[in-house]
Length: 324
Image (tube, rainbow, N blue to C red; front, side):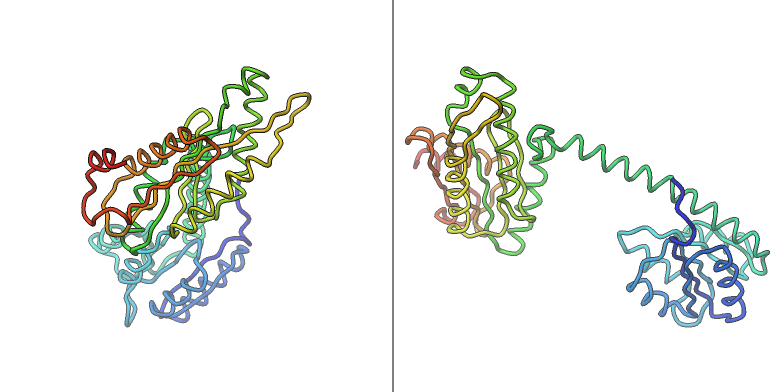
C-alpha cells in the first residue's frame, strides 16, 4: 500500500542556501514534509529529534562532511534512505558515495525533475521493503507463538533465556526460571474431551500472560507444562510470583459449556546468581527437577533451588543432584 506524500518526511542538508531553498520548494510542492538545514552537525541534531524517511545530503560541506554524516547515520538501527548531491562528478566520487552507504547519487547541477523522480523511486522501494519487513515480523510471530495459549513456543525460548542470562550476569542481577505443570491434567481429557482440555490450557495461558511483567516472558513448554522467565528478581520476588500463580490457578473454576473442573498446579523454580555460571538448558533442567520434587512432595506447591547457595564458579550439576 502506497503511503501518501504528506506522511513522508524528508531532511535536506546543503550549505548552499540557494540550492537548499530550490530543493525544499520542489519537495514541498510535491506534498512532502520537509526540513532544511545547512550543515552536517545540524542534520544529526535534527535526526535525533525526528528520524526522516529520506535524507538528501550534500557531500561537500564545512565541518562534518556528507560522507561523515552518513557514516554516523548508519550507526543507528533504523534505516534511512540517502541521496547524495554533489558537484564532484568523477566516477570515483560517485563510487565513494555509494560505497559509503548512499542509495543514490546526483551530480550538480541537476534537473529538479530528475531529483523528484529519484525520490519517488526510492520511496517505492521503501514501501516494498516495509511491506516485506511487516510480513516477516508477522510470520516470525506465527512461528514463535503457540496459538492455543498465546505464549511463546519452545522454538526460540532457549535463545531468549541465554540472552537474559548474559544480561543478568553483566548487571549482576538474579533472574528466575519457573517450570509449571498442571496437576493430574490427564483427568481433564479422561473425564471430559480434548476441546475442554484445550480450553483449560488456553485459560492458563491467559492467567500467565496477565500475571507477568512486560520485561518477563513465558512459553508453553509442551502439553500442560509451562516455562516462565522472571527477569531482575530476588528470591523473595520470584517465590511470591510462583506462590501467587499457584493460588490463582487453585481458585480459578474452569468452566466451558457443560464441562467444568477445579485444578491445581505444581511449580519448580531456579534462581540464578551473578557469581555462578549456568547456561539456559541447565537452568531449565534444574527448574524442571524441582518441579518434579513439588509433584513428589504433594503437588499444588512451589519448590525452589537458589544458585546463590552454590559456591562461585562453574556449576558441577552432578554434585548438586547428589546433594539434593
